[in-house]
Amino acid sequence: MRVHEPLAELKVGLWLLTHPDLRRVARIRALMVYLYEELAALKPLFEGRR
Image (cartoon, rainbow, N blue to C red; front, side, top):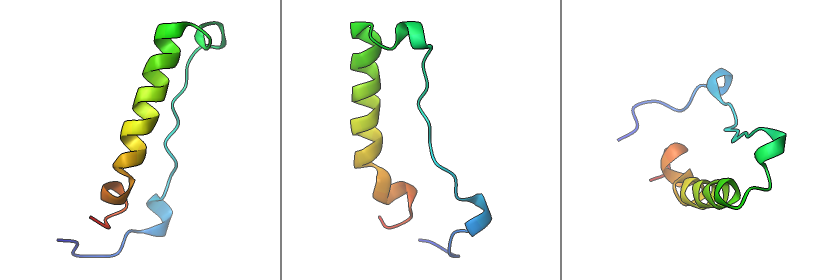
């Protein structure tokens, strides 16, 4: 149960970064897609709506 609204000054985005040379490597790309989808599904939890 949320006890307080989120503090605006603590709101930050989440960045997934990789070295430019590795960006098109199939296994790195697959991992980035997987992480993006999994984290997007958990967005309501991170935002305290679930």
